[in-house]
Length: 121
Image (cartoon, rainbow, N blue to C red; front, top):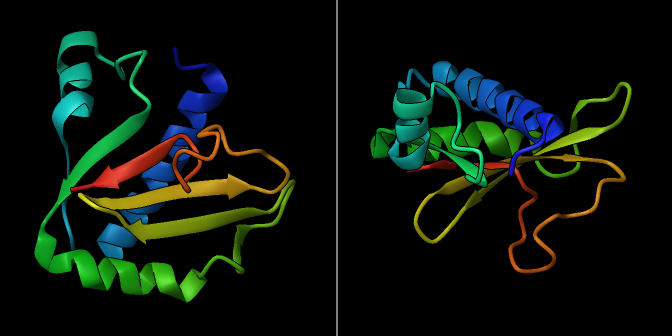
């Protein structure tokens, strides 16, 4: 079940994804369980562990190019803690997540990304 902190991290990650998408003139749409939660519950489904967004696949390389400008070593936020942006071309989607310095991966070595993350399909 999502905690308030988890939900806040999801919103922050979505805002960064939205900003990157806007910079490459890509539109985003809620997809799958994220769309269902918005329609049925008016909020994320409490047990959903990620946010699913759809973006035109033609914009994928441009989106990744912006992500690469940051890389894993350039913080996007340095106060109060260092926050790093991660974008990975996964098996079925682009995975985007924020890593706050000092916060352990909730995925427990099953997945490389930190939860919560955004799947861009």
